[in-house]
Length: 541
Ligand code: GLC
Image (spheres, rainbow, N blue to C red):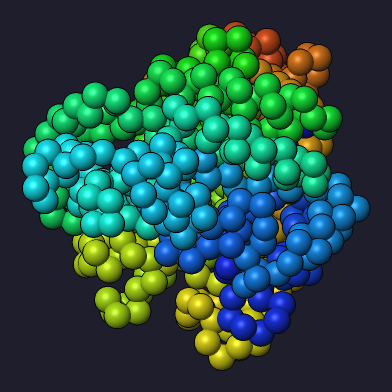
């Protein structure tokens, strides 16, 4: 179960490293940076889609599941990346997009060619309610009706996301067979598993019930609805079981990570499967999106995960390619440096498998386009200015202080490099022992070195404290445990701990890592002082 102890790093290939000067990142660029990733301490990379695609949704609209988009390289480049990653003991996780294809995928081109085509039933085609009227009120996640009329055959097709992303019909056994072949194709090439895109959306109500209306309107001006009949249908679990059985046939314990934005722990828990026979690592969006430094809320969520009877392995992250970076969601503008370290500590000291997103380790900021005409992500065009799209969190990786941050030699990277790159970049931060990057490295090393952080139980302590989130990782062999204290307030705090109920009788704690840097290395447990948004990781016995 390597994935239980792994640190996973998400790479948006378009923005990571350009190796051929066209302004777009590529596979050889990733290969070139593997030493950096190894040094950072990660165990696996998840690469977002680099398959041939018209790039409407920047790769999530796939036109061929078993090839590499020439923008990103060739299959030989991919194989070289795999080989070089393996040589460094780094695993590669693919992004698998089962819910929909591109409208340029040959399957959809066939399907839309006539009502009697053999692939017609590979997608969701329905008659309208009346002339010019969609079959029902279902909405696309990206705005407006989820149905698009195709005049050629006089029917509508369903698309949960962009109109260029028609949904596959997972009730059709041929679709399942074809998609499982895709998974085998990549497993045969040695990948360590898949991140399953939007997998809770695989099925829709066959009776086409209208979704319930909710008050208010979204950024696109549509009436809000509850996506009740297009998300989380019970049949999803059948497919997850089949996918798990498939990956389990391969050596090396391949992993399934699900992008499933579940509203509560009960729904999240179902994803493991009743016999732990579905997803090994369902992403926990509740933790990612607390969006305020609330000790009480984080404690509640961590406890829920801990008491989760399914016994599956949690998976935490704060950043990804779909939402503003944490710096902007959690920062207060004054203590951002401390807050970045606090979140890094939370991410890297709990029992959950942690996932980083490229650039978070150097403190990259969300940098949305300033003008509508500069927006690349279509939802930003449709929802401007309320919804500026996701370009802001996809800007090029900031490697050094040279022009375009060492990302590309082109004068026009696909998205502009944020002005912050001069100070915030890998080269500068690597040299500074107090940088955020150095802090991440130390945390990852600690996570590996301390048996309690690796295998210890997780117990929240001082549970009525409104400002501090504190928890113990208890050493399984009764020796050194680890106490983590995070001050989620803007006040200096001094706090006392009695850890006897946890079997810890020592009266002092030995600092392993803290921010700001401490004056002493040993602190008495009856008076631990933390600066505003201060962080402390210490060993206790
Ligand atoms: C997932 C991806 C997102 C994409 C969508 C449609 O949510 O993370 O980037 O736009 O699926 O594929």
